[in-house]
Image (cartoon, helix red, strand yellow):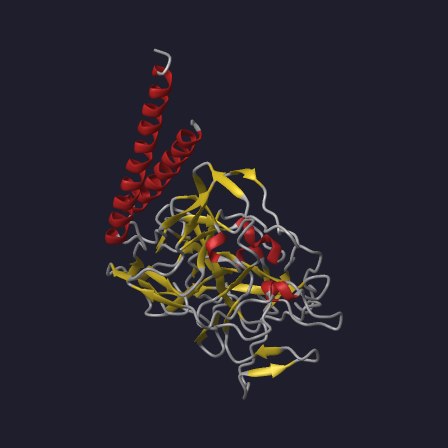
Length: 429
């Protein structure tokens, strides 16, 4: 007699959980980037009063007789489909179209391989801005990770073709002075150059020419290859020593024991910076009109009128977007259930075969396949707005009505069972 009451109580608990999910969706109907949740009901345990049989040549078979004991929570899923574009008019606000997430974290994260990607937090909310220290951050002041612009060590002023092929078959950009490094780092505004003088190497007294202008952006260098001739790190000019007489890098340590040769300025990675190094003022460059384009490039205009690209916001993708773990607010983690994670830039910016940390194919073999950057050709970034919530008010209200009636029906089972038990007790009188 009491089995029905236990089943009803299970149903009450499950319907209340569903109501909690609906209430959370309604509360976040105007929250940018919110992904609506959906709860799936599941049958609870069964007891078997009679087992089934297939029958014999003489007697027929029978189906099993079972009684269930209510319902339980089967799963609570996220609707990770993209929301609609909600214009804000802010140039740094952006929405990611397609699967994927912006990547955020603390400033000190290091990524030696693709296995380290899970250190990052994922978000669909692109409310970016520049903090007082020049870092690109979101609304909660978490640092945005991406691929910054660096000075191209392979640049050739007299190059006739955009690319050259090295001995290992790598496609090398030799025509652009600046290139995006594939080292995943916190994005930060470049430092500004001091006024060029003869003493700091910015003015040539013979040709009467200036190598740079005061306030120009000073980009990091792409450092030499590591001991395995693969990984190449970014180096700030504040960490490099420069010989004004020879116009060469005097010392540049990449952290793995590959300093530049003091005489030639070259390393085993064949880094030979072409031209004088701007003297840095120690102050961040002042940028106006900051915005983010469809490839995720964060662009501003310096006081000199120079267009400065800080870098490209990285896009992370997981095998199962619905399997990411919500860690609070607009943030997720690629934990168990999300599958493997890849990183790249929207719009197919990187060439096929581009690897993390500027790794190249060498005589010793290619880098790990997981370290290859995703082209993300199907992704695009829209600026000037944020992604709206995927919670739909009409759907949530209809679900709320159905849940309320289900809860009400389960309470009736409790009261009916109670009445029947009362009749049983009264039989004694």
